[in-house]
Image (cartoon, rainbow, N blue to C red):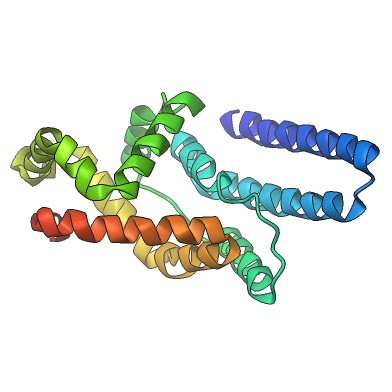
Length: 214
């Protein structure tokens, strides 16, 4: 039922965008622009619908909202067209399945991931990668408590730790890290810029908290 409602929501959003483009066409008669935007919309919808099939439950909603921010650019180059094909092929063939107990746990902890909550998460992440040194300095106490928790035996015996390790394993073995992410970086310039900033922020973070690299 959840998947059906989310699929319908994607379709409704796409239809609203199409109607807005038709209105722009009527006002400006700019066929080239409208056609380009319709192609962007089609590719965006193709990817988001496939993500709905691949990534489970509310976690999948988070994934879709995350990548949707970077799927508003036309794929004009041959490299971008090839990257789009790679993304679609990956999503058509990947098997992203968790053990039932971890899937239940993931659904439970992500059930409140509505758009407002996810928006706050994205905003917080943007702040962290735009000026990582400042972010770490301003949140030092919280980060150090978080690091202590993650290094504790209690955490390592928890379902949260098992889920973390299982997701890392799936990302590594499925090709998410080596196929999907590189293709997304080529398909979307804005995502490529975001990911490069994220990697640099991670390097700064690990230099201050090296235990996280283990």
